[in-house]
Amino acid sequence: MPKSIIRARNLTKKFGITQGLVQKLQGQPKMYVRAVDGIDFDVYNKRSLALVGESGCGKTTVGKLIMKLLDVTDGKLWVKGRDITKLTDHRELKAYRRTAQMIYQDPFSSLDPRFKVFDILEEPLLIHGIGDTIDERRAMIEEALEEVRLTPPEEFIDRYPHMLSGGQRQRVAIARCLILHPTFIVADEPVSMLDVSVRAELLNLMKDLMDEEDLTYLYITHDISTTRFFTEDIGVMYLGDLVEKGPVGEVLDNPLHPYTQALLTAVPEPEPDRLDRIKEIPIKGEIPSGTNVPKGCRFHPRCPYAKKICRKKQPREKTVDHKLHRAKCHFAGEIEFKMRVRKVGKGGKVSKVEEIGIDELRDEETVPDELK
Ligand SMILES: Nc1ncnc2c1ncn2[C@@H]1O[C@H](COP(=O)(O)OP(=O)(O)O)[C@@H](O)[C@H]1O
Ligand code: SF4
Ligand SMILES: [Mg+2]
Image (tube, rainbow, N blue to C red; front, side, top):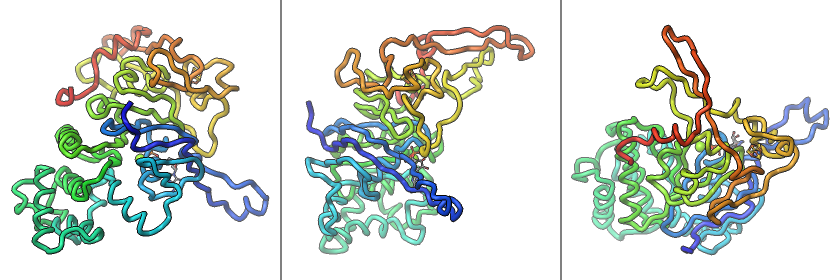
């Protein structure tokens, strides 16, 4: 087994909710959002991990805990064998932050609009005392721009962020990480705010950099269809918990948890080339609030396969075939997943509702051609 670079055990982050005066006077107990609710995972050396799930399930909070932008409430987090929950010394934190870098979702707000590209990329070098002269730093900046394919570098080095496209800005953000030669990068939805036409290009670049720079990523995304191409391992988050995890091929080809199934079949509607049918994602309603996590299996109010036990007993992690592929579902490996498909006849009339095996529908994968 490859070496674990990041190891989380019972990783927990709760955010306190500010109470109003009335609630305080009434002596109501303080409320918490259980943003990350006691999860275990490993990110192995040069085996990137994707964290997927709907908005609000806790992905960014995990990224921020790893980056030490937030303190853990409970549990342990080791990075390269060191317990970083205990890291408080300013100098040690600074050294840690050189090895761990983060790419943010929004390239429009993550770059200071008053700085030119040169200044943006020089800043981390100055903070960490890298490069004795401005010429040395300039050479490093040009090299970083070349690495992210912003070439020739002299064409970009004196531009302000507003003179760059969204994709180019995100490349500058990646160059700002690379310039410190980090061990791993937390990439938080790195392409979700970019134009669809440049997303695949940027993911391809990040993938190439993984090989060229010996990088490991924690890749955070709500788009499960990009994970097969981009990472080796995957963790599916639901309401602060990791409900399924394992090697990416195992999880995507043989999902054990109904929530993973739902993510895999959640395709945008309508399908312009198939106006004769409407697919229904087999989960109900919205993600509940993190202040009020359902008892038993936290997914039970939305799960089409829920049984009595699901409302009472929290499922433990189960393996079925592959020992690293685990899911927290009482019926993992026993559910025959089906999807409802409404056939639409002439004049938009729904003529029949069918249940179709999900494997059949998944053959028409939603992965963009460029990423296949
Ligand atoms: N600073 C904060 N204070 C209070 N609640 C927060 C804070 N940051 C995140 N949360 C809550 O924690 C949960 C997880 O948020 P987040 O990690 O941003 O999810 P994701 O990245 O998956 O969309 C959400 O319910 C969110 O509202
Ligand atoms: S434990 Fe029950 S409610 Fe939870 S995912 Fe499995 S079948 Fe659904
Ligand atoms: Mg987020």
